[in-house]
Structures are given as C-alpha cells and as structure tokens.
Amino acid sequence: MDNQPRATRKHQEIKPPLAKSVGEIPDGNIATLRRQARDCRACPLWKHATQTVFGAGPADASIVLIGEQPGLQEDLVGQPFVGPAGQLLDRALAEAHLDRPRLYLTNTVKHFK
Image (tube, rainbow, N blue to C red; front, side, top):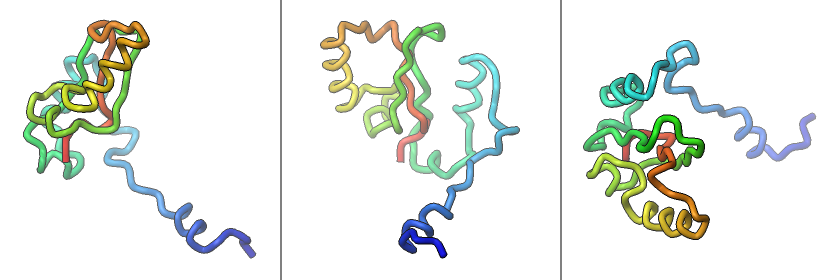
C-alpha cells in the first residue's frame, strides 16, 4: 500500500498535456521562430492577446533571461519586460552591472492572458 496521502498521489498522477509533441516543435533561426510564433494557435492563449510577444535582444547574447509570461504592457507594446516587471528587472540589472541591450529577453509563453 502506498503510504503517501491521497492528494499527493493524485497530484503526481496528473500530468498536463504538451501543447505540441516533441516531433512538432518548430526549428529554425530566430527570424523563422518569430514568424512561426506570430501565427501560432497551438493553445488558446492567443485568443485573449493583442499580439505575440516574442523575445528581444541579440541572437548571439551570452545571457538569456526567461520570464513566465508577458504582462498587459508587454502585450500592448509587443516587447518583453516593458511593464512593472521590466522596471524591476532594469533596477536589478543596474545593480548587477549588466547591460540590458546585450541580453536576450523572452518569456516561456508568448501571449498574455
């Protein structure tokens, strides 16, 4: 008999489905991926967004910062980290002596909900 509480067992058994199977993940350079993301309808998040918020910065950046999802300001502007989280990020980058234009900034999710 499993000694774990029922809620824990249930939580472990539930795995969210992937939006795309591994064989369907797009490949290509940044420009190709940006075009593919612009028209992506693989999940329902696009329905509430005004546009895709793709990454920004040099493709060869040595540092990549990844947020969870764009916020309202990012959705309206179409750029990552321009709202309140971006202001906080800018202060943190200044304290760390990192130059934002040399970083690649993106989010795991490309649409705001």
